[in-house]
Length: 102
Image (cartoon, rainbow, N blue to C red; front, side, top):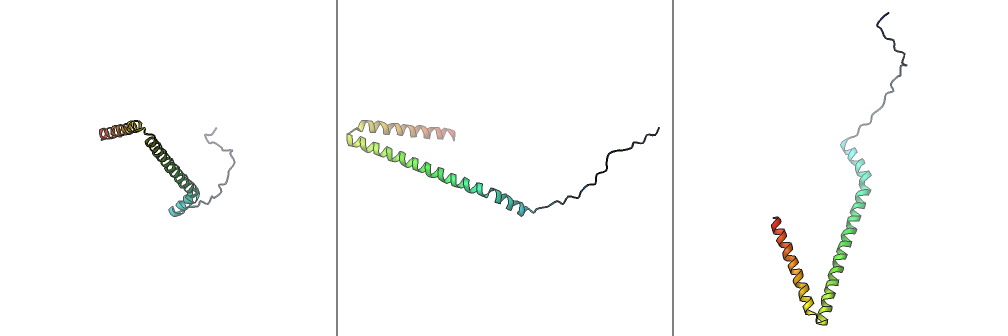
């Protein structure tokens, strides 16, 4: 007996595959093309969020102002004074916390 091994596997010819190469600019252009719509949508949503936040702040400020005016008209100065003092104390605590963080 001989030590030779006979292969019975069929011989398959390899097909040549053409590979396409891209430059960095071409790759960047493809990425921009595919993500451009997403970026526009993100910008649009961020704009809407900022607008909604601004409207909410304005509404809150107008409500606070209306409440103060109503209290002044009714002569509820004590409540107005206590509310102002509470806001002042809250601001002081906020500043104190901020200074401690520094």
